[in-house]
Every structure is written in C-alpha cells, then in structure tokens.
Amino acid sequence: MKKILVIATGGTIATVKDNHLHLENPLKIMDYIEYKDVVFECVSPFSVLSENMNIDLWNQLIEYIGQIDFDQYDGLIVLHGSDTLAYTGAILGNIFYDKKIILVASDKPVEDESSNAIPNFRTAVDFLLDGVTGVYLSYDKLFRAETTNSANENDVFFTSGKQNAPLQNPVLKKKNILVINPYVGIDYNNYNLDTVDAVLHSMYHSATAPENVLAFIQKCKDKKIPFNFVTTKSSVEYESAKDFENIIFNSTIENAYARLLLT
Image (cartoon, rainbow, N blue to C red; front, side):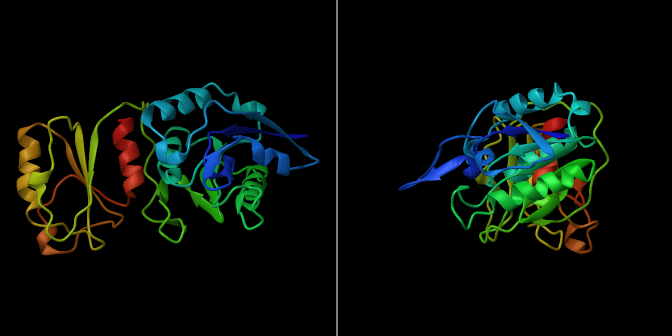
C-alpha cells in the first residue's frame, strides 16, 4: 500500500463560496478523493489565504517538513493557495530539492464542478507514485517549483529561467527585501532605504533597466545595502546594461527572492 502525507495550509482549495470566498476546512478536498491503493495521512499546521502568507508561517511549514521521515512516505502534497504558490514553491524547492513534494492549488472551491482542485490533486498523486524526486507545483499541469512564475491575470502559471545549484545550509531569515519593478518615469527617490536589508530589482524582458538606476545603486552601496538585478535571460546584450553588476541570471523574481531570504 502506498502512503502520501498531505499538509493543508489553506487557500482557495480550502474555501467555500457564499457571497465571498472564505476558509472552511483546510482538508475538505480529502472528502472528494478516494484511492484503493493509497493511504493519505493528513495534517494542517495552519490555515491561511495565501495572499496572507508570511515568513513566520513559512518557517512553521519548513520546520514541520524538516521533521518528516520521508522514508515512511511515497511523497508529500502541500495544499496551498494560488496567489503566492510560486513563492512558497521557490522556498521549498531551494530547501527540499532532494525530496518528493508537490504543492497543489485550485482556481475555485472543490465543490464547484468547474474547479481544477481534484484534477490538480490527482495529477500530484500520480506523479508522486511515479517516484520522481524534486519540488513541483500542480496547477492544470506540473511545474518545477524553482522555475515557476506567479500566475498571470488569466490564472496561468508559466516557467522561465533555469534551476540553480543547491544552496549550502539554507536558513530562512526575516529580511526586509525591497523588490522593485522598473517602469516608465520611475523615480528612485520615492524609495526609503532606512529599514531595507537588500534590494532586488527586476529587469525589462531584454535584460535592461533605466539608466537612473545607477545613482540608486550608488545610494545602496553608500548605505551598505546589497543590490541585485534579476532576469530570466542568461546574459545582457544591450550597451545600456553592460556596466550593470550583481545580476542574477536565469531566474524568476520568486526564486531570486527566495534565495536571498535563504542566504
């Protein structure tokens, strides 16, 4: 008999809809799942809508998973909300890269006939039973956690970048990381660095950024605040970006953010 551990953390997959979506039972999908050859052991260390996920809850989840004897299971399923699914996936993917873990989310409550909750869960189970190692997300299809971007406005996840080398002894620390996305007319004077521990600055799709970022980078250096660019590209090609330093290549924002928190 196969055995899978299910950890429920909340999200739409745990909600019910009346006038609005609200959390009901973090493990309610298990009332809709039946496998003759699989035993599911279920726990819920906390329950939260994923837009309210925070570093303290991440540490709680990491601590719980870190105590699991994976030899006793054929894999682990984490039930999660879709809004921050890629962020949690990146965190778990960088810590538990050698384990069998799949995060499962849904677009609607499980009792909604058009929900993808049950197909997503079944995809995760089938994949775990195939014995593949690594951390993945199950949402309409499977995605490698460390290379997955957050869903777009059409509720579609996609992958970019490449997997990074494993971190040595990753520990999740509470850091105030300022994430900046460039836009036309950006004024870096609007950013207060007084409580910032590090800056993560995304780049345009061609791995460029506004030239006035250079003065902001110098300001960060003066304050001894680490500054990193991040791009899914493998190199910079434009002359305007040739002098940029500290670029994290082949990475999603979510994965770069996770790795900064873990180092």
